[in-house]
Length: 152
Image 1 (cartoon, one colour):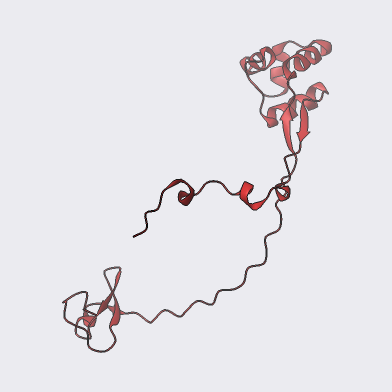
Image 2 (image 1 turned 45 degrees about the horizontal axis):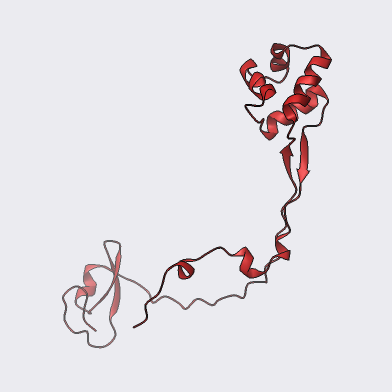
């Protein structure tokens, strides 16, 4: 092996030295230019416990006919769009876009509207259990699946 600084052939074992942030293998003479590093201890790999199947909690989605439910509930209460907007601390334009169906309310706004109007806008949707899928279906494509590896 050759010294990474001077290029001379290293007699014996090379010295690991950190010089300006780089760790190099040097001869005994060039080791004075940096800080001598200890030999890294071999890491003992701990056995990781088997993975538990991942379950997704049921998520909430807004109903498809949310706009008509909101409009009918608001009209039943006798409120204008301005009144409803004031009660849920939103702009009137947001309420108008939600009622016209141009905007789907996020979960936070849908919960506010449910509470104020006393209606149900969210439905729980359970995702597929990932345990049912085999290991091939969980894993996506890798570089090895896509690239053709040329062997010498």
